[in-house]
Amino acid sequence: MGNKPRRSSDLPKPAVDALWHGNVIEAIKVVRHERNIGLKEAKGVIDAHIASEPALKKKIDHVLATAQQRFIRWLIGFLVLASGVAYLVMRGP
Image 1: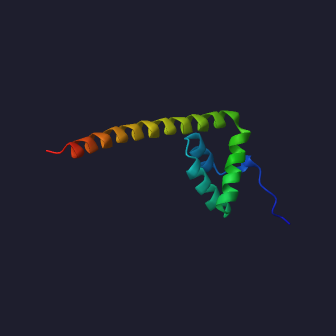
Image 2: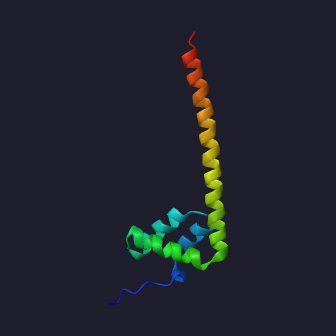
């Protein structure tokens, strides 16, 4: 029928801006709202747009890697703190 997929270049400007700021989730939300489509479809549109722009893909990959590194550092810090507390509790008064 008339349900052909749109080109990834007609993303709404707020979605493109969100992508360039590294916010993929916000871009998906914008596309879902603007086009009135489901989550899976919106994610597909965003993924296609990212794949079509190598500079944007590099930026998104860098943002994801940085977020992963921060999470790992936070997790290690939390585990060190938790093990210190556990040691103090087990040692007793």
